[in-house]
Length: 134
Length: 134
Image 1: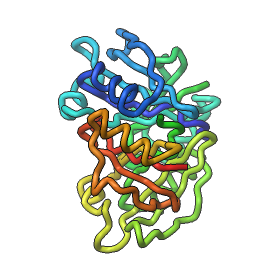
Image 2 (image 1 turned 90 degrees about the horizontal axis):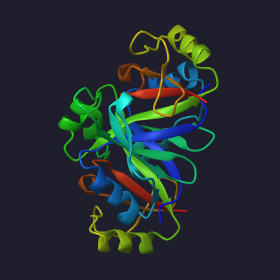
Image 3 (image 1 turned 180 degrees about the vertical axis):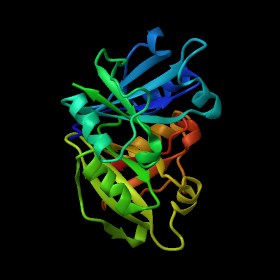
Image 4 (image 1 turned 60 degrees about the vertical axis):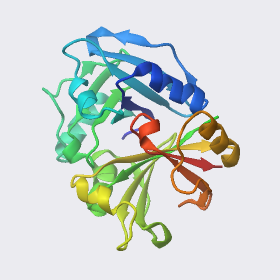
């Protein structure tokens, strides 16, 4: 069911410093920062040959990653995003298998403009999982 | 410098349950468990079209992931592994840029039989980073 790993999201408190780590220390290709006010994040994309790392900085007072950022001063891995072909079919399969979907279970439009859902970390090896329809 | 994301490592306390989550709930292709006593882990590979998830269970009394597993009962993301072409050149570049390499700085043979180094999480966005020469 799940396809490619679309991205690994890393929450940081200093986006410039994090960008420099990936660009200068690790020598990766990075994007300019992009504000996504509807999602409460500013993001920099680290483009690897096979997937992306997304560096996320809280944006605004209601950012969904504000608490995580405050709890992880040096930053930290926040979630993994897997691609699915049909998010409704994927959701129904996951629920039938006993996995919990966060929120009301209805897909939202995610940061890439595509339908997404988040899955409960306790049911997925302690990992917050996003599924995105591509 | 860094190339592909080789794998995301997730430490778990119940490898059978974690394997079932990825195989049954998420519908991914998973390997049989492999004991790697020299590395203190039993691992299951989740094969995605573009990268791998490695589920790691502590093996033996001196497992390097024993403490992480104990601190994360539901499991948790443990490290990211990036591929490099030349691990000595990568190491020297990282150190020159101010990044700390763990241990004595000499590459060890990793779980895939290739030279690896681990980088200090505090210098890499709160993320334990492995680099592997491929």
